[in-house]
Image 1: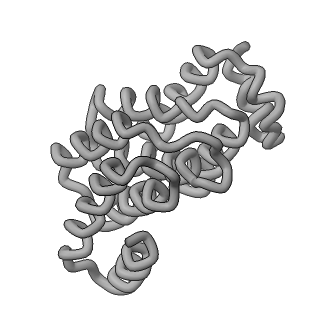
Image 2: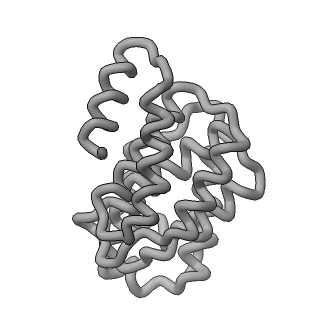
Length: 174
C-alpha cells in the first residue's frame, strides 16, 4: 500500500482498515512521517503523533514501537526523542492496546535517552511515555526501569508551568 493511501486511512481514523495494512508498509509510513516531522522547522505535532500512536494500538499494530525506536537510534536527537515519545505516549496507552509494553523497547528508549541532552519539553514528553508503562500490565522488573527514570526526572528542576505539570505527571505515575 502506498504512503498516500495509508495517510488517508490515518486521517479517517479507521483502525479496522489500518489493521489490514502490512507491517512493512506501516513501518515505511511511520518512518516517512517521523522524518518529515524531524526535517520540518516546526516543533513536532504532539497531538497528531499521539493520536497516530493510539490509532496504531487500536489497530493491533502494537509492535510499531520497534521501527519508531529504531528510527530514533539511527540519529538520536532531542527532536527525534520528542517525536518518538509523542507517538509512544499514544501507542503505549493502556486503554488502547491489548498486550504489555516490550521491556526490550523500553530499555532501548532509556538507553537512547542517556545519550541525548533533552530540553524541558522533550523531557516531559519522555516522562509521559514512561508514565504509560507504569499504567500497563508489564512485569514489575520492567516497571522498575520506568520508575527509576521517573524518579530521576523528579529530581530535576523545571520552570513554571512545566514544574507543576511534571510533578503531577510523575506523582500519578508512581
